[in-house]
Image (cartoon, rainbow, N blue to C red):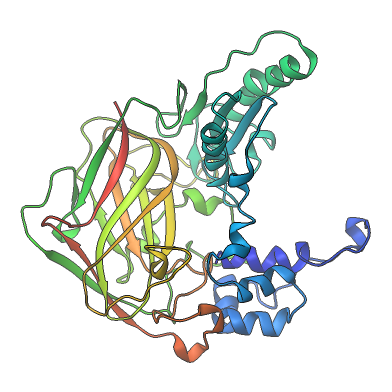
Length: 424
Protein backbone atom coordinates (compact mmCIF):
# COMPACT_ATOMS: atom_id res chain seq x y z
CA UNK A 1 0.00 0.00 0.00
CA UNK A 2 1.41 3.41 -0.94
CA UNK A 3 0.41 4.68 2.45
CA UNK A 4 0.95 8.42 2.31
CA UNK A 5 -0.96 8.93 -0.93
CA UNK A 6 -3.70 6.45 -0.09
CA UNK A 7 -4.32 8.13 3.26
CA UNK A 8 -4.04 11.87 2.68
CA UNK A 9 -5.45 11.89 -0.86
CA UNK A 10 -8.37 9.61 -0.15
CA UNK A 11 -9.44 11.32 3.09
CA UNK A 12 -10.63 14.19 0.87
CA UNK A 13 -10.88 12.80 -2.67
CA UNK A 14 -12.60 9.65 -1.44
CA UNK A 15 -15.39 11.47 0.43
CA UNK A 16 -18.72 11.08 -1.44
CA UNK A 17 -20.17 14.17 -3.10
CA UNK A 18 -23.87 13.56 -3.71
CA UNK A 19 -24.13 16.61 -5.96
CA UNK A 20 -21.82 19.07 -7.73
CA UNK A 21 -19.99 21.25 -5.24
CA UNK A 22 -17.38 24.01 -5.33
CA UNK A 23 -13.93 23.32 -3.86
CA UNK A 24 -14.41 25.80 -1.02
CA UNK A 25 -17.47 23.88 0.18
CA UNK A 26 -16.15 20.41 -0.54
CA UNK A 27 -14.23 18.01 1.73
CA UNK A 28 -11.11 19.54 3.23
CA UNK A 29 -7.68 17.86 3.16
CA UNK A 30 -6.70 15.98 6.28
CA UNK A 31 -4.97 18.18 8.87
CA UNK A 32 -2.07 16.29 10.41
CA UNK A 33 -1.69 16.79 14.17
CA UNK A 34 2.11 16.93 13.79
CA UNK A 35 4.27 18.12 10.88
CA UNK A 36 6.38 14.97 10.76
CA UNK A 37 4.88 12.32 8.49
CA UNK A 38 7.32 9.59 9.55
CA UNK A 39 6.43 10.02 13.21
CA UNK A 40 2.69 10.38 12.53
CA UNK A 41 2.36 7.12 10.60
CA UNK A 42 4.72 5.21 12.90
CA UNK A 43 2.83 6.27 16.02
CA UNK A 44 -0.43 5.15 14.42
CA UNK A 45 0.86 1.61 14.94
CA UNK A 46 -0.77 -0.08 11.94
CA UNK A 47 -3.00 0.68 8.96
CA UNK A 48 -5.87 -0.90 10.89
CA UNK A 49 -5.39 1.60 13.70
CA UNK A 50 -5.08 4.44 11.21
CA UNK A 51 -8.38 3.56 9.55
CA UNK A 52 -10.26 3.06 12.82
CA UNK A 53 -9.00 6.31 14.36
CA UNK A 54 -9.35 8.70 11.44
CA UNK A 55 -11.75 7.23 8.87
CA UNK A 56 -13.91 4.49 10.29
CA UNK A 57 -16.00 3.20 7.38
CA UNK A 58 -16.43 6.62 5.75
CA UNK A 59 -13.98 6.09 2.87
CA UNK A 60 -15.14 3.46 0.39
CA UNK A 61 -11.69 2.96 -1.13
CA UNK A 62 -10.23 2.03 2.24
CA UNK A 63 -13.14 -0.26 2.99
CA UNK A 64 -12.41 -2.07 -0.27
CA UNK A 65 -8.72 -2.40 0.60
CA UNK A 66 -9.65 -4.22 3.79
CA UNK A 67 -12.27 -6.40 2.09
CA UNK A 68 -10.00 -7.33 -0.81
CA UNK A 69 -6.37 -7.49 0.38
CA UNK A 70 -5.23 -9.53 -2.66
CA UNK A 71 -5.68 -9.10 -6.41
CA UNK A 72 -9.03 -10.86 -6.54
CA UNK A 73 -11.80 -10.51 -9.14
CA UNK A 74 -12.91 -7.22 -7.56
CA UNK A 75 -9.60 -5.52 -8.44
CA UNK A 76 -9.08 -7.45 -11.67
CA UNK A 77 -12.33 -6.05 -13.06
CA UNK A 78 -10.99 -2.54 -12.36
CA UNK A 79 -7.66 -2.94 -14.15
CA UNK A 80 -7.78 -0.27 -16.81
CA UNK A 81 -5.23 -1.68 -19.26
CA UNK A 82 -7.35 -4.73 -20.13
CA UNK A 83 -10.09 -2.36 -21.36
CA UNK A 84 -7.83 -0.45 -23.77
CA UNK A 85 -9.23 -2.21 -26.83
CA UNK A 86 -10.84 -1.07 -30.08
CA UNK A 87 -8.93 2.22 -29.94
CA UNK A 88 -9.81 4.32 -33.01
CA UNK A 89 -8.51 7.90 -32.56
CA UNK A 90 -4.84 8.88 -32.67
CA UNK A 91 -3.24 8.56 -29.25
CA UNK A 92 -0.18 10.27 -27.80
CA UNK A 93 0.59 8.81 -24.37
CA UNK A 94 2.60 11.28 -22.28
CA UNK A 95 4.32 10.45 -19.02
CA UNK A 96 7.07 11.50 -16.65
CA UNK A 97 9.92 9.29 -15.51
CA UNK A 98 9.72 11.02 -12.11
CA UNK A 99 5.94 11.02 -11.69
CA UNK A 100 5.55 10.20 -8.00
CA UNK A 101 1.83 9.57 -8.43
CA UNK A 102 2.16 7.20 -11.39
CA UNK A 103 5.54 6.49 -12.99
CA UNK A 104 4.10 3.12 -14.08
CA UNK A 105 0.90 4.11 -15.86
CA UNK A 106 2.02 5.89 -19.01
CA UNK A 107 4.36 3.12 -20.12
CA UNK A 108 1.87 0.35 -19.39
CA UNK A 109 -0.93 2.27 -21.13
CA UNK A 110 1.21 2.67 -24.24
CA UNK A 111 2.23 -1.00 -24.21
CA UNK A 112 -1.36 -2.19 -23.70
CA UNK A 113 -2.67 -0.12 -26.60
CA UNK A 114 0.13 -1.43 -28.81
CA UNK A 115 -0.54 -5.04 -27.85
CA UNK A 116 -4.34 -4.94 -28.05
CA UNK A 117 -4.63 -2.56 -31.02
CA UNK A 118 -1.80 -3.41 -33.43
CA UNK A 119 -3.10 -1.03 -36.11
CA UNK A 120 -3.77 1.91 -33.79
CA UNK A 121 -2.00 5.23 -34.29
CA UNK A 122 -0.35 5.27 -30.88
CA UNK A 123 2.90 6.98 -29.85
CA UNK A 124 4.78 7.59 -26.59
CA UNK A 125 6.39 10.68 -25.10
CA UNK A 126 8.36 10.39 -21.85
CA UNK A 127 10.34 13.14 -20.19
CA UNK A 128 12.01 14.00 -16.87
CA UNK A 129 8.79 15.25 -15.36
CA UNK A 130 6.85 15.05 -12.14
CA UNK A 131 3.06 14.54 -12.23
CA UNK A 132 1.83 16.77 -15.06
CA UNK A 133 5.24 18.44 -15.23
CA UNK A 134 5.11 18.61 -19.03
CA UNK A 135 2.61 21.50 -18.71
CA UNK A 136 3.54 22.96 -15.31
CA UNK A 137 6.78 24.78 -16.02
CA UNK A 138 9.80 24.81 -18.30
CA UNK A 139 11.02 21.37 -17.26
CA UNK A 140 14.67 22.44 -17.18
CA UNK A 141 15.32 20.89 -13.76
CA UNK A 142 13.72 18.85 -11.01
CA UNK A 143 14.87 18.94 -7.42
CA UNK A 144 18.66 18.85 -7.43
CA UNK A 145 18.90 17.54 -11.01
CA UNK A 146 19.59 19.84 -13.95
CA UNK A 147 18.41 18.90 -17.46
CA UNK A 148 20.23 21.69 -19.38
CA UNK A 149 17.18 22.41 -21.54
CA UNK A 150 13.50 23.35 -21.22
CA UNK A 151 12.04 19.88 -21.81
CA UNK A 152 8.41 20.89 -21.21
CA UNK A 153 8.66 23.79 -23.64
CA UNK A 154 10.17 21.45 -26.24
CA UNK A 155 7.31 19.00 -25.76
CA UNK A 156 4.61 21.67 -26.04
CA UNK A 157 6.06 23.28 -29.15
CA UNK A 158 7.27 20.20 -31.04
CA UNK A 159 4.83 17.48 -30.01
CA UNK A 160 1.69 18.60 -28.19
CA UNK A 161 0.66 21.59 -30.30
CA UNK A 162 1.47 19.98 -33.70
CA UNK A 163 -0.41 16.82 -32.60
CA UNK A 164 -3.62 18.65 -31.83
CA UNK A 165 -3.38 21.04 -34.79
CA UNK A 166 -2.98 18.11 -37.17
CA UNK A 167 -5.56 15.70 -35.75
CA UNK A 168 -8.18 18.22 -34.58
CA UNK A 169 -7.83 21.00 -37.16
CA UNK A 170 -6.17 19.26 -40.11
CA UNK A 171 -3.37 21.81 -40.09
CA UNK A 172 0.31 21.21 -40.80
CA UNK A 173 2.09 17.86 -40.47
CA UNK A 174 2.76 15.51 -37.60
CA UNK A 175 5.48 12.96 -38.15
CA UNK A 176 6.74 12.27 -34.63
CA UNK A 177 8.65 9.10 -33.87
CA UNK A 178 6.98 6.09 -32.26
CA UNK A 179 8.77 6.81 -28.98
CA UNK A 180 10.07 10.28 -28.10
CA UNK A 181 12.21 9.94 -24.99
CA UNK A 182 14.28 12.42 -23.00
CA UNK A 183 17.28 10.62 -21.56
CA UNK A 184 18.37 12.06 -18.23
CA UNK A 185 22.09 11.99 -17.48
CA UNK A 186 23.01 12.73 -21.09
CA UNK A 187 20.14 15.25 -21.17
CA UNK A 188 19.02 14.78 -24.75
CA UNK A 189 15.91 13.83 -26.66
CA UNK A 190 16.05 10.54 -28.55
CA UNK A 191 13.65 9.06 -31.10
CA UNK A 192 12.99 5.31 -31.27
CA UNK A 193 10.94 3.12 -33.60
CA UNK A 194 9.68 1.01 -30.69
CA UNK A 195 9.52 1.14 -26.91
CA UNK A 196 11.44 -0.41 -25.37
CA UNK A 197 13.90 0.12 -28.23
CA UNK A 198 14.87 -2.88 -30.33
CA UNK A 199 18.54 -1.92 -30.14
CA UNK A 200 18.84 -2.97 -26.49
CA UNK A 201 20.98 -5.68 -24.93
CA UNK A 202 20.00 -7.14 -21.57
CA UNK A 203 23.11 -7.16 -19.42
CA UNK A 204 23.41 -8.75 -15.99
CA UNK A 205 24.75 -6.58 -13.19
CA UNK A 206 25.90 -8.95 -10.44
CA UNK A 207 26.05 -8.44 -6.67
CA UNK A 208 29.45 -9.31 -5.17
CA UNK A 209 30.79 -9.61 -1.63
CA UNK A 210 32.00 -6.44 0.09
CA UNK A 211 29.40 -4.23 -1.55
CA UNK A 212 30.74 -4.63 -5.06
CA UNK A 213 28.64 -4.51 -8.23
CA UNK A 214 29.92 -5.69 -11.60
CA UNK A 215 28.93 -6.93 -15.04
CA UNK A 216 31.28 -9.85 -14.34
CA UNK A 217 29.96 -12.85 -12.41
CA UNK A 218 31.36 -13.36 -8.89
CA UNK A 219 34.06 -15.99 -8.55
CA UNK A 220 32.72 -17.01 -5.13
CA UNK A 221 29.92 -19.53 -4.64
CA UNK A 222 26.93 -18.98 -2.36
CA UNK A 223 28.33 -16.01 -0.45
CA UNK A 224 25.82 -13.69 1.20
CA UNK A 225 25.29 -10.44 3.07
CA UNK A 226 23.30 -10.59 6.31
CA UNK A 227 21.59 -7.80 8.23
CA UNK A 228 18.57 -7.10 10.45
CA UNK A 229 15.41 -5.22 9.50
CA UNK A 230 13.21 -3.80 12.26
CA UNK A 231 9.74 -2.60 11.17
CA UNK A 232 9.56 -0.53 14.35
CA UNK A 233 12.51 1.53 13.04
CA UNK A 234 11.72 1.50 9.31
CA UNK A 235 13.95 2.97 6.60
CA UNK A 236 12.63 6.42 5.63
CA UNK A 237 11.84 7.03 1.98
CA UNK A 238 13.53 10.43 2.17
CA UNK A 239 16.00 12.31 4.33
CA UNK A 240 14.86 14.98 6.77
CA UNK A 241 11.45 15.75 8.25
CA UNK A 242 8.48 16.51 6.00
CA UNK A 243 4.84 17.25 6.67
CA UNK A 244 3.74 15.73 3.34
CA UNK A 245 5.06 13.38 0.67
CA UNK A 246 7.31 15.33 -1.68
CA UNK A 247 7.54 14.72 -5.40
CA UNK A 248 11.29 15.31 -5.42
CA UNK A 249 11.96 12.07 -3.56
CA UNK A 250 12.01 10.44 -7.00
CA UNK A 251 15.48 11.89 -7.68
CA UNK A 252 16.71 12.58 -4.14
CA UNK A 253 20.18 11.93 -2.74
CA UNK A 254 20.28 8.45 -1.18
CA UNK A 255 23.37 8.90 1.02
CA UNK A 256 21.15 9.01 4.11
CA UNK A 257 19.99 5.46 3.36
CA UNK A 258 23.46 4.17 2.46
CA UNK A 259 24.59 5.01 6.02
CA UNK A 260 22.01 2.70 7.63
CA UNK A 261 22.93 -0.85 8.67
CA UNK A 262 19.54 -2.14 7.44
CA UNK A 263 20.17 -0.96 3.86
CA UNK A 264 22.55 -3.08 1.81
CA UNK A 265 24.48 -1.01 -0.73
CA UNK A 266 26.39 -2.25 -3.78
CA UNK A 267 28.26 -0.12 -6.32
CA UNK A 268 30.41 -0.48 -9.43
CA UNK A 269 33.86 0.87 -10.03
CA UNK A 270 34.03 4.25 -11.75
CA UNK A 271 32.58 3.90 -15.26
CA UNK A 272 35.03 4.19 -18.14
CA UNK A 273 32.25 4.85 -20.67
CA UNK A 274 28.63 5.98 -20.75
CA UNK A 275 25.91 3.38 -20.12
CA UNK A 276 22.37 4.21 -21.26
CA UNK A 277 19.35 2.26 -20.00
CA UNK A 278 16.06 2.31 -21.93
CA UNK A 279 13.19 0.18 -20.66
CA UNK A 280 12.27 -1.79 -17.55
CA UNK A 281 14.92 -2.97 -15.08
CA UNK A 282 14.51 -6.53 -13.82
CA UNK A 283 15.51 -7.44 -10.26
CA UNK A 284 16.57 -11.08 -9.82
CA UNK A 285 17.17 -11.66 -6.12
CA UNK A 286 18.11 -14.78 -4.19
CA UNK A 287 17.23 -14.09 -0.57
CA UNK A 288 16.23 -15.61 2.74
CA UNK A 289 14.61 -14.30 5.90
CA UNK A 290 14.06 -15.57 9.43
CA UNK A 291 10.48 -14.31 9.12
CA UNK A 292 7.63 -15.57 6.95
CA UNK A 293 7.09 -12.40 4.90
CA UNK A 294 9.15 -9.37 3.89
CA UNK A 295 9.08 -6.36 1.61
CA UNK A 296 11.85 -5.91 -0.95
CA UNK A 297 12.81 -2.43 -2.10
CA UNK A 298 15.31 -2.22 -4.96
CA UNK A 299 16.77 1.19 -5.83
CA UNK A 300 18.91 1.96 -8.88
CA UNK A 301 21.15 4.97 -8.21
CA UNK A 302 23.52 7.20 -10.20
CA UNK A 303 26.55 8.15 -8.08
CA UNK A 304 28.15 11.45 -9.10
CA UNK A 305 31.95 11.83 -9.08
CA UNK A 306 33.52 13.16 -5.91
CA UNK A 307 35.27 15.89 -7.90
CA UNK A 308 32.33 17.15 -9.95
CA UNK A 309 31.84 20.91 -10.00
CA UNK A 310 28.08 20.65 -10.65
CA UNK A 311 25.78 22.67 -8.41
CA UNK A 312 22.15 21.90 -7.55
CA UNK A 313 19.71 24.09 -9.50
CA UNK A 314 17.50 24.10 -6.40
CA UNK A 315 20.23 25.30 -4.02
CA UNK A 316 23.21 27.26 -5.32
CA UNK A 317 25.15 26.43 -2.14
CA UNK A 318 24.79 22.67 -2.68
CA UNK A 319 27.55 20.85 -4.50
CA UNK A 320 26.65 17.65 -6.32
CA UNK A 321 29.93 15.88 -5.50
CA UNK A 322 29.17 12.31 -4.40
CA UNK A 323 25.43 12.79 -4.91
CA UNK A 324 23.50 9.52 -5.07
CA UNK A 325 20.62 10.26 -7.44
CA UNK A 326 17.68 7.88 -7.26
CA UNK A 327 17.00 6.86 -10.86
CA UNK A 328 14.36 4.23 -10.14
CA UNK A 329 13.00 2.44 -7.09
CA UNK A 330 10.31 -0.18 -6.64
CA UNK A 331 8.86 -2.22 -3.81
CA UNK A 332 7.43 -5.74 -3.82
CA UNK A 333 5.60 -7.34 -0.94
CA UNK A 334 7.38 -10.67 -0.78
CA UNK A 335 4.33 -12.85 -0.27
CA UNK A 336 3.23 -11.79 -3.78
CA UNK A 337 6.50 -12.84 -5.42
CA UNK A 338 4.80 -15.60 -7.42
CA UNK A 339 1.22 -14.35 -7.60
CA UNK A 340 -0.72 -11.26 -6.60
CA UNK A 341 -3.81 -13.43 -6.36
CA UNK A 342 -2.40 -16.14 -4.08
CA UNK A 343 0.10 -14.92 -1.48
CA UNK A 344 2.70 -17.40 -0.20
CA UNK A 345 4.67 -17.44 3.03
CA UNK A 346 8.45 -17.67 3.06
CA UNK A 347 10.00 -20.72 4.65
CA UNK A 348 12.32 -19.26 7.31
CA UNK A 349 16.03 -19.41 6.43
CA UNK A 350 15.37 -20.99 3.02
CA UNK A 351 16.98 -19.37 -0.03
CA UNK A 352 14.16 -18.11 -2.23
CA UNK A 353 13.97 -16.32 -5.59
CA UNK A 354 12.29 -12.92 -5.65
CA UNK A 355 12.08 -11.56 -9.19
CA UNK A 356 10.21 -8.46 -10.32
CA UNK A 357 10.36 -5.50 -12.70
CA UNK A 358 11.05 -1.89 -11.87
CA UNK A 359 9.20 0.70 -14.00
CA UNK A 360 10.83 1.83 -17.25
CA UNK A 361 13.85 4.10 -17.19
CA UNK A 362 15.54 6.35 -19.71
CA UNK A 363 18.85 7.39 -18.21
CA UNK A 364 22.54 7.63 -19.08
CA UNK A 365 25.10 6.85 -16.41
CA UNK A 366 27.95 9.05 -17.52
CA UNK A 367 31.62 8.16 -17.73
CA UNK A 368 33.19 8.94 -14.36
CA UNK A 369 29.97 8.09 -12.47
CA UNK A 370 29.09 4.80 -10.75
CA UNK A 371 26.03 2.57 -10.71
CA UNK A 372 24.69 1.78 -7.26
CA UNK A 373 21.97 -0.57 -6.03
CA UNK A 374 20.40 -0.41 -2.59
CA UNK A 375 18.28 -3.20 -1.11
CA UNK A 376 16.06 -2.57 1.92
CA UNK A 377 12.90 -3.92 3.51
CA UNK A 378 10.93 -0.78 4.28
CA UNK A 379 10.31 2.54 2.48
CA UNK A 380 8.39 4.39 5.11
CA UNK A 381 5.92 5.99 5.18
CA UNK A 382 5.77 6.03 1.40
CA UNK A 383 4.69 2.39 1.71
CA UNK A 384 3.10 0.76 4.75
CA UNK A 385 5.24 -1.49 6.94
CA UNK A 386 5.44 -5.24 6.63
CA UNK A 387 5.29 -7.06 10.02
CA UNK A 388 7.68 -9.63 8.46
CA UNK A 389 5.11 -12.20 9.40
CA UNK A 390 2.78 -13.92 6.92
CA UNK A 391 -0.68 -12.55 7.59
CA UNK A 392 -3.34 -10.16 6.33
CA UNK A 393 -1.45 -6.93 6.98
CA UNK A 394 -4.67 -4.92 7.06
CA UNK A 395 -5.50 -6.80 10.26
CA UNK A 396 -2.03 -6.47 11.82
CA UNK A 397 -1.73 -5.12 15.36
CA UNK A 398 1.35 -3.21 16.58
CA UNK A 399 2.44 -6.34 18.45
CA UNK A 400 2.68 -8.28 15.15
CA UNK A 401 5.64 -6.26 13.85
CA UNK A 402 8.86 -8.14 14.48
CA UNK A 403 12.54 -7.98 13.60
CA UNK A 404 13.92 -10.36 10.98
CA UNK A 405 17.38 -11.25 9.74
CA UNK A 406 17.77 -11.10 5.97
CA UNK A 407 20.31 -12.51 3.58
CA UNK A 408 21.12 -11.52 0.01
CA UNK A 409 22.98 -14.28 -1.80
CA UNK A 410 25.55 -13.69 -4.54
CA UNK A 411 27.70 -15.98 -6.63
CA UNK A 412 26.91 -19.47 -7.81
CA UNK A 413 24.35 -20.36 -10.44
CA UNK A 414 21.47 -18.33 -8.98
CA UNK A 415 23.12 -15.41 -7.17
CA UNK A 416 21.42 -12.00 -7.15
CA UNK A 417 21.69 -9.62 -10.10
CA UNK A 418 19.83 -6.92 -12.02
CA UNK A 419 19.02 -7.30 -15.69
CA UNK A 420 19.61 -3.93 -17.33
CA UNK A 421 18.27 -2.80 -20.75
CA UNK A 422 21.51 -1.32 -22.13
CA UNK A 423 21.17 0.68 -25.32
CA UNK A 424 23.73 -0.45 -27.91
